[in-house]
Image (tube, rainbow, N blue to C red; front, side, top):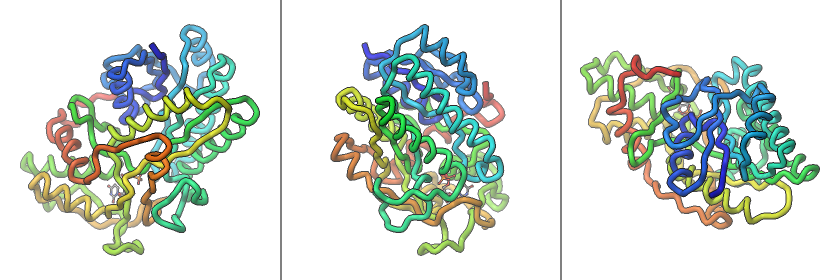
Length: 341
Ligand code: UDP
């Protein structure tokens, strides 16, 4: 049985990955500091509470267990927060990743799947973005991830580290089988916030007192709101499985990058409209200023992932993605009961 370590496996995407790996017969260990994740989201793996900023914990784990590969999801990932708290972003994301990869090398582990982001590209020059597009991130979150990509390339040359960089577009949706969802605290992501508003209205809240804000309606897009490429979390995870297989087949050190997106963009207003249709709720919004660090448009080409990894996303339509999310958000316990452990 192949043994893998999932760092950040108690988070949104990580916990979905852990479930899928378990179903595929992997022996899974999760390392998570629970700063943003949830202990109860890890149901079918050994759980180790530990922090990437504490190298001695990493060393002890790698001495105790042998892993063929590491999947690294642990990161702070809010664009807006990264602008006001860059120190936290560089420390957690960059220093944490350096500690992890150094500990892996010390333990002789050379296979890594790294959760990177389309935020490494910055403002697109051409759409859809391909992996060859220039990378000039416009916020500290994107910069922290790009620096990790860069040091991984150098580690590939010098130490034979084999890394697959998966550049996610906007992860959305919840496990189609139920039981796992998207829980961030504070929640800043668009889809959960829209569905939280739908739920508030469904439960008797006054639509006019909406808690949803549209961050900017003056972007250079057809309706003035930002355009993003929403990709189902299940599809993101299936790409990781394909990437794991590729890592085990490719012999030499180096990095390979793949975009994971649907290749189709939806504006914030289009997502709100789709959620209105799906839930039947009167979802309203206030118009607020732009959020710092937001590019107008991010839409990716995943042609390479399909060609090289043989990746076949299952959820192509925004409605399907929202539907799985609504199943979770429409029925999850109220916020006050969603304790963060
Ligand atoms: N957004 C918004 N209101 C919100 C949250 C997000 O208008 O309450 C917008 C945000 O400005 C961006 C898009 O929705 O254009 C997606 O944001 P999200 O935080 O979900 O993902 P990101 O693109 O930052 O990774």
